[in-house]
Amino acid sequence: MSGTIAPADEAGIARAVAEATAPVAIEGSGTTLGMLRPVQAARTISTRNLTGITLHRPQELVIAARAGTPLPEIEAALAEHDQVLIAEPPDLRGLLGTADRPPPTIGGLVAANLSGPRRIAGTALRDNVLGLRFVNGTGEVLRAGGRVHKNVTGLDLCKLLAGSHGTLGIITEVTLKVAPAAERTATLVVPVDGTAAGVSVLSAGLTSPYGVTGAALVTEGLEAAGIAGPAALLRLEDVASSVAYRTGRLRAALPGVSRILEGEESRAAWRAIRDATALAPAEGEAVWRLSLRPSAAHAAAAALRAAFPARLLLDWGGGLVWVSGPATEAAHRVVMAAASGGTFTLFRAPDALRAALPVIPEEPAALARLSARVKASLDPAGRLNPGRMRAGL
Image (cartoon, rainbow, N blue to C red; front, side, top):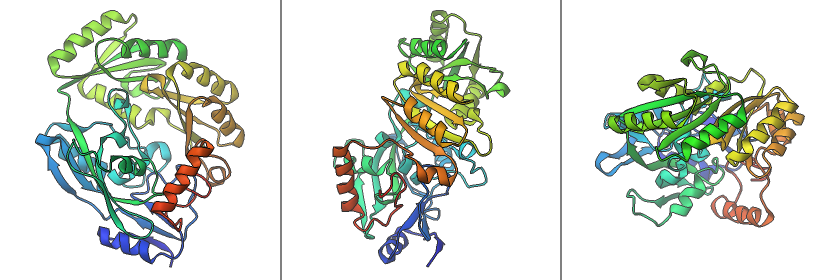
């Protein structure tokens, strides 16, 4: 059989996997299909019909939802209680060329371990996962973790599934810890004359005592917000009185602040950074994400710009570098070299390029052997998203 099936419940997912006799592709809403390597499978199992919030205990800062629940639905439910997802997961449809797809699902975001600007102030999305339900490669329904903050049992398995891109199991339900929403947000904008100066400003903000929760360097793409770039952006969030005080103190400590974005203007700028829409890749371009030491960001940016007309967006204080450029093997090799000492991910490229080249760094031999054992334990027949991350995995 071929095509896509979207069971209405977890039992249907388990049955579909148990009855599979050949590799299957796994997807939620399909927003990240162009990321990493293309999966060669005649049949796709989608979790898009596994929807709905199954638990929300605002007083305990916990929410649980089925894997196919759209991100906006979860954000809206949390907003009713003045709460947010801690890791600020992004909606990358614009970046990945899947704007015609429905919004990302919570299961897909966890499976890809996608975190936004607030990553620098808290934790990655995988660190906010309290529990998971998932179907392994033999069709068994398994549970890891729980629904309370003090639960320890199974958290390692939660972290294995988060970021495994559907290669170890199909996530069917996620339980997450959440946080109170900030009463006020403000963003200081500091025009700079280059990457080195921009990263220096971000570092000064992050090492200050003023609790910066967003630190990005925008080179272009935020003109609609009145930010021509290059400019360093530093965000403060908290109760109104605290933000007012810390904004004044940080502005006094940083020479060159040109303006301060408040309220919705600030939130809109950070949504653009979160979703990397400021990068604005052209049709047919490739998109990479590098994770580096912030001190290495300037050298990496210089190497990339010297090799091809790279468009850049830096987040996480310079520790995360988004790059768009020509979808060629030569450009990819330059990105791999620029990521030396860190890591890289190919987020968008034509299928032929994604299939021919490493889309993430190769693992050290010892770690590769461990990964293979984990894969053999959870998906012994190798049916789930084969080759998604690396050939054979």
